[in-house]
Amino acid sequence: MLGYTITQWLFGIISFLSIMFALMVVFTRNPINSVLYLVLTFFCIAAHYLLLNAQFLAIVHIAVYAGAIMVLFLFVIMLMNLNQDSEPQKTMMSKLIAGIIGGLLLVVLVGALKGTEQLQLSQVGHSEIGIVKNLGRVLFHEYLFPFEIVSILLLSALVGAIMIGKKEIK
Amino acid sequence: MINGISINMYLMLSTILFTIGAVGVMARRNTIILFMCIELMLNAVNLLLVAFSVLHNDSAGQVFVFFVMAVAASEVAVGLAILSMIYKNIKSIDSDLLKNLKN
Image (cartoon, rainbow over all chains, first blue to last red; front, side):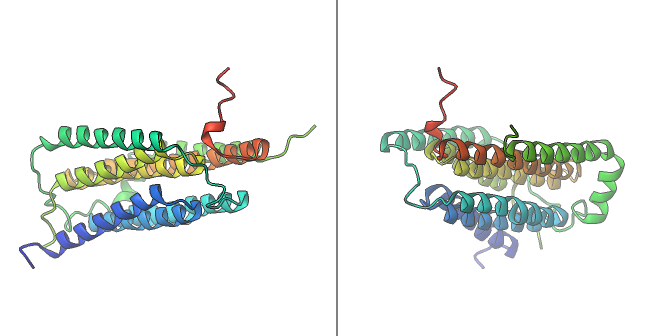
């Protein structure tokens, strides 16, 4: 098909979808729709991980982001009863300035990255580093100490969230 | 058969996603949406880390993405707790109203 392989077609379609959904996250008025579009964006990014043969990360990404974090967001938004009417809007001027600054950022980053040499991701599809067996071995041998530190970080975040969220005891 | 995507495509995609996140942080006032745009920027960087880890056939990038996800999860938990307390106190999560530290 027009000289492109099926992987390139898949990459193009998924990239287009992820950019569209990411734009919808920013430009949708209703916060709940915004969260749902962000979930779709995360699914597209998980598809990118699968395309890169990083299966473990794809599953963890869906479980952690789409499963846990976005449900937390949705829960908080519904708890606060936010909808389109209560949504605060910036003035047209500051939106315009934000757009200009974003466009400049894009131009600078693209200009800086354009000069990098063309390298092909030749390992895609044959790379075995992303599967659970190999990544688990690396994680529990070379990165065992950071892994344990992360568990302490999650525990302290849990305790901190509860401490912040609870009512003041007089 | 499965190859032929250059790293520059991943660079461009990540740059665009990162910029969309940055514009979202600047253009919105709802603090929860700001959080979501920060998540979007984190994910753009994660995607690029995975792409480079596959390019160099090195697991370190993917392990790092795993740790970034853990840090993002704890950040969101604490951040949303703070936001719900702010909402309880001032009945709004408009970021323009959060300027009590100014004076």
